[in-house]
Amino acid sequence: MAYTTTAFPDNFLWGASTSAYQVEGAALEDGKKASQQDIINRDNFRERGFATAEVTSDHYHHFREDVALMAEMGLKAYRFSIAWSRVIPDGTGAVNPAGLKFYHDLIDELLAHGIEPIVTLYHYDLPWALVERYGGWISRQVVDDFEAYARLIITEFRDQVKYWTTINEQSIIVQYWTQKCYIPEEFRGNNQLRYQINHHMNLAHAVACNLVHELVPGGMVGSVIGYSPIYPLTSRAEDVMAAQNAHDLRNGYYLDIYFKGKYTDSAMAYLERHGLAPKIEPGDMELIASGTSDMLGINYYASECAKACPDDGTREMRWNGVNLTGKKGDISGFETHPGFYEMCKNPLLDTNDWDWAIDPIGLEYLLRDIWMRYGKPLMVCENGLGAFDTLEADGTVHDPYRIDYLSRHIAAMKRAMDYGVQMLAYCPWSALDLLSTSNGVKKRYGFIYVDRTDDDPRECRRYRKDSFAWYRNVIANNGAGLTL
Ligand code: BG6
Image (cartoon, rainbow, N blue to C red; front, side, top):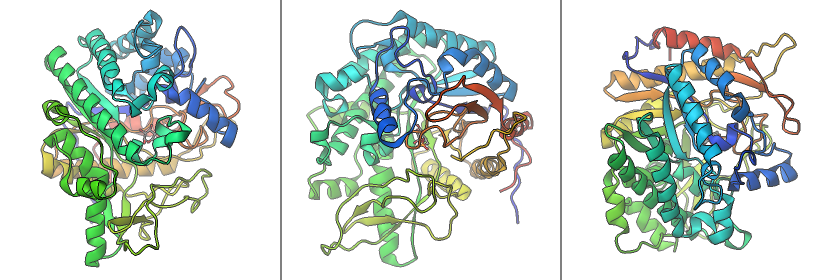
């Protein structure tokens, strides 16, 4: 029998989400200097024809219009990130007053419209100066520099911002490390560095949690995890075990740090056996354990599937491939850890054009699972459907596929809540169209259409998609009446 939602709690935060480099543009304006994403996306443009990060959605110049549109939708929260290289252009040292002013203006504008800011301190965009100086996240020095940056931002906005998230999607950074971090060519063959970078991020995350607890009375802080529940391909015991192994290395390995202050034993044993484990210095685990989380942000797009993978010399270790074309089936390969697990396509689920499985029940499953294991409040910081949208001659955009996707995911989240999961917010990706991390601007997620192409930013005019009116209605009804 179909499940239909009843109203959400009165204080539930209906929101939407973006990240700085994907939406702001003004990449080198008003004192901002390059971040590693400016460099990565410049190369993406040259090699693949995807848009650079120079203009993206030009939110820097359109933010008042964008906030007005968010208010028109009825948003109660907006989750966005701060660009470190806008406020401290060289990564350390001099603060850029114009950069701070931009975020002051944005936060003031949000609050004036009754929209709660949910701030992410770091979303893939390390100042390029730090990559040049010491290789970026590869070096432990970044932890101290992040601390100075985080202290500045948290102090500056502590009276206005209650909800803080630290680092976006460490689990995804490990998987797709050259997309999400600039990794100098000579290091790309060294996979241990994926886990070393993650260890440095764990330290930075703990530092930021401690800073929020020190500086923001009544504040709440946590990480944002990119999370896919992992199903076994079959009910064979070997496949079920492989799915557990994949869960431990891809999900548990992060969750246990945030909530238990320790690395997952099985994942660590696997990494140690293969020379991939991070180097941990005295005091590191104590610091990590001290940085307790009050909540967790979850980014959910798709569930994944795993099967047994024999360690018989026929397969090599590898990390996830990516679909660069938007043609179903063009994914360039699956993560493989011989003797532990191999990821694969779930034959039972449809996908979007980039091979991401569409699975609303996966959201209910993961929320209940995380709640049961760790018992902390959760917020969905991202969830959405990347699609090719069409702007019609009359300025409309018909995106029933997105409405269907979001509607069923909201219903799945509500069913998890009916079973006791405490949810603070739902912030789908994305408030407006922006630059995808892997597929340029033609892969769209927004409620608001931004008129530009990968090679021509045009004027970035905004248009309301059909999903805009639909989401306004969902919020007006406080989520009641949606069917899974
Ligand atoms: C999440 C990221 O991984 O997924 C976002 O936090 C990203 O930054 C989103 O945009 C969708 O991924 P993509 O590659 O389609 O942009």
